[in-house]
Length: 362
Image: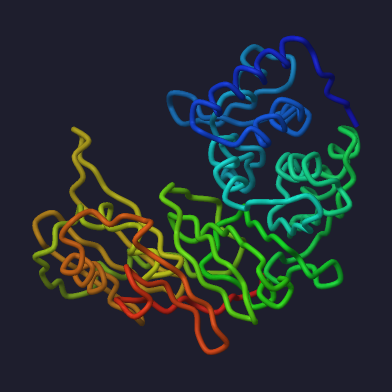
C-alpha cells in the first residue's frame, strides 16, 4: 500500500478549504477536524471528465491533484463500466450533514456508505474510533478504506455488508448518518437506534433529519439540497423503445415542470430517474421519466405524452403541478416513520403526503 505523505502544500490547501467552509457557517469543531484530517490520504486518485465528457484519472503527484482534492467539490473515486459508483462528497455538504448530526462526546455513530473512509476519519477524530462503525456493500471499498484509515491513525469498525441491515451487534447507536441516496429509512436503523437518536439521511434530492423515539421517527428536511449516488439495488431499465408503439395522448403540463418539481417528485415517485433530449441549439424538446418498476413516460414540449407500465408517471407530475404553484421549499417537507407506514408530507403531518417504499435488500 502506498502511504500518502502530508506536505506543507497539502496543509496550506487544507487550511484554505477550512476557511471557505468557515465562510459557509460550519461549526468550529468540524472545521478543526477538517484542518487536521488529510483528505488526500483517502483520495489518492480521482476521476474527472474533460471538455468532451471523457473520464480522466488524476493521481497523487500529478498537476492539479492536490488542488482538486482540497477543492470544495465532490470527487469521483470509482468507475464501473465507465459509470461513477463511488465518490468523496463535497466537503461543504459533508459538514452540513455532520453539523446536523449534532454529535456529542461518547456518542456511538453508525455511518452507512464507507466510500473512501474520509467521513469515517472525520467522525473518528472527533469521537474516537471505538465509537464509529461504518458499513459499505462493496468489499473493495471497505478493504481500501480500512487500510487508509489505519495509515492515517484511525481504526473504526469497518463492516462489509448491505447498509440497509445496519450493524446490530454494534448498536444501539446514538447517531446514524447515511452517505448514499435512499428511498426510505430501513426499519433496521430504527431498531438499532437508541431512544432520542438522530438520523441524517439523503432521500431523493434532500436531507431528512429525524429523531427516533419508542420505535418511531419524525423530523423534517434540511434547507440544503443534496443528491448522493443511490444505494445499490435492483431496478428496471427505461422502456423508451416500447413507447414508440404507444398511442400518444396530450398534457397541458409543460415538460419543464419535471425539473422544477424534482424534489416532491422523488418523494411521490421514489427511485425515479429522468433524462432530456435537446436539439442542436441545446433547447430541450422532450423529457423522459422512469421508475424501478419499469414505468416509463415521455413528455414533448408540444404537449405530446406517452406512458407505459404499472404507473402513469406523468399523471403524478400533473398532480404536483396543481399542488405547487410556487417552487417547493425543502424545509416545508417532513418525514414520519411508525410501525405501520413511512411517509413524507408537506407542511403538516396530516397534509399532502406520499408513502415511501419498503427497502429492498441488495
